[in-house]
Image (tube, rainbow over all chains, first blue to last red; front, side, top):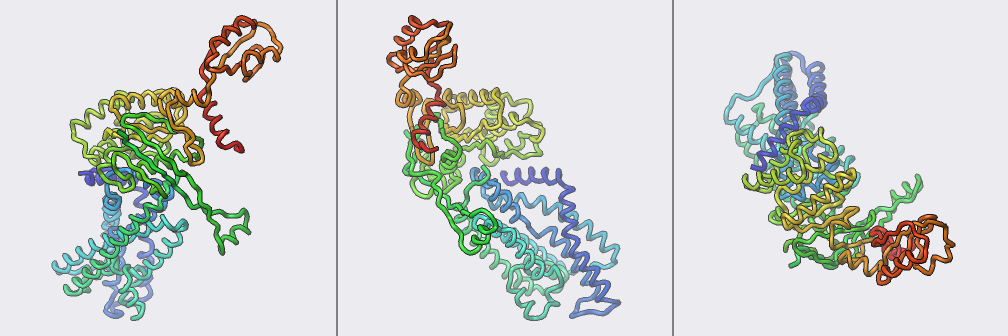
Length: 264
Length: 325
């Protein structure tokens, strides 16, 4: 019940600041939209294709990036570093008989729902304007893609929680966050589909966790993965999740000892 | 039975020291100097169930750090802390359900929503039964006179009203142990007085153990702990503090006519003389006799006998402990 109440209160708070949330969404939208226009204008003309990607699939890819970014990507690390650690808001959580991780997770959901709604509206508008939007029609693959997306969201959230907790050790954490954003941009498939990367770079991307947070949910929904490949992706995501979870636990136990409750 | 048990508690912070200017910044790129600051230095004390204890000390004395260690926010560098039989830092849920820490400059209310929403959230977090919750809301809103603004968004409340809501949120689960860190900060004198009365009322009504850091707490707490530079300078009853550290009374006299200051010394230590007002510090045992002598020998218009000012005594203790300051 406590988490339902938190969800209920955060939802009220999010709706109070919906305009700000929409602006954040627009900022995040800018990058894939510009890339989409670039690909459509320069590279693909008519019916030509590169490594099996044509104008329809590439358009869908960038529209789905917009959706994935809105639904799956967490920015909780910034809140943790800025508010909880630097301003000492963590004290409020530490004094309550409640899990910090799950409280943060539940608080994140209303933001994701609102951002996701913006994403759906914009995707519908753009797909009508551009006349291109394609996802798989296989129900089994769609179910797998949804599962991959849920795992991706959990991965993104836990990973950002870990990054946020690092601010208990590193005072100048913002540079580190920016570096992570840079890696995300490249290796999560925000710039181009990883399939179009040179083989070495693609292999590096598949080893790193970023692709499992954005790229694979998208190409699964586009029908570019078989059921077996989907299961393989879910397995890798599971391994990352276990690794992240234990890393989070370790950092939480030891990070609390570093906490000084500054700002009070 | 002691509810709070602190043994040889120390809390150290590693603080980065940088020389001023650009040169210092460049130097710090290659070698950083750190200094260990002892915020709390080997302190020990015990607090019994239902006690209301004042924790007094100047800024940076170690009061807040001690309260944070007691509530489990900080991990002690050395020593042992036990509250209600629990080690606070372990954050055992049944421990957290029995304590509360109110920090005057920190708020836990949802800014855009009415205070009642935070209370309802706390009802779920602390698993308070509906009946008990209603009782507490009624009780607290009555004592704090907060009924009218329970449903007003927090951002629309005045500072005093917000503080009342903060207190309600902190006490809705009726904690057995309450830590109050400067709860009167920023409040006007009327509100400060109300708050002190409320703390006393809460202590009596709920038999809660309260550790409080604030100014003007002498009228509230029988026992006080004075701390400075992380060390306890005094721990005992307020009466003992006066007896031990200020065994005198203050006699205030208003003269009808001017008297040679040299003639005044026979009555006691002259603390202050600005005609027509004189203040004497007179030994406790002889204060009545001396007052009679003053009335007899000096041209007195008015006379008062008072206990020494607690703040003066405390300041005196700080000065003696740290004469260079």
